[in-house]
Length: 79
Image (spheres, helix red, strand yellow):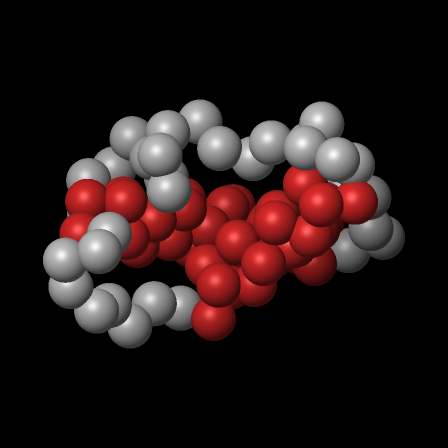
């Protein structure tokens, strides 16, 4: 990050790391409390309310899979 103001550069870096942490809390398959892990664990047995970004990511993944005839596969574990 480059800025004439070191403070603004630092704030931008902090904001980026905060967003990475938010995404990890939503989408990590290594964290059993993440929303994606909860969806995987409770699939078919319970309704869950999840962050719109989780749904948006799943829809985009399905679309890219369709557009690439399955060559793009976002799954690492059963969804």
